[in-house]
Image 1: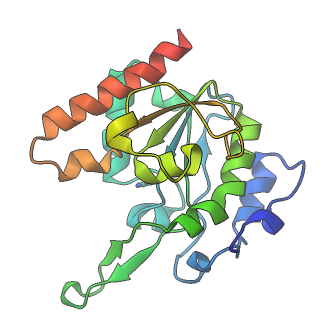
Image 2: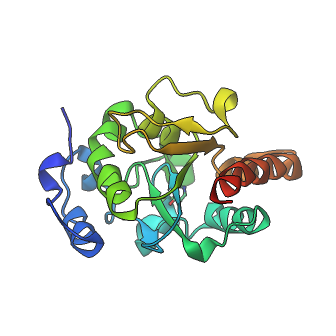
Length: 210
Ligand code: URA
């Protein structure tokens, strides 16, 4: 099976983890992506946010959520009473997976990671959770939900609730609040309503902090 496990150094701090992740070959996604996009943010964060995988902009810049979805996320966090500067942000999968559509020329079109790729990347997420020790983890969308809560996770059913993560998964039973992926706001016809739902779910995570 694909796994990042042999690439994850034991007893490493965040800096050493990030360096090691740059050389990860635990699954085939490293071949086409520009670089590993490791987590970033406040190492003392009480809230950790987990997205799906880097997008086109993130793959170019090497930081999570620097593109359009990140703008939506920061605004929604702020509105929910969570300071974006006091969070740690990462992705379930740390390489950009994409395809080319002939009609669209050089444009790289995002492809969802497979369950095998999600679980292969789990050891990085696990190491991040162990070092950050967040009080609550927000799963942004179906991929992050599957990574933290198991493959039967369904975002429409479970969003906006406090859940105990999989004991055997990357968060070792820690508290997870799932919500939609912020890019769903950008794709929606009724953007305001979908955005409002994201903010409401983030408030559930904010309430955990008291
Ligand atoms: N979407 C994600 O899931 N993660 C990012 O880092 C950017 C967009």
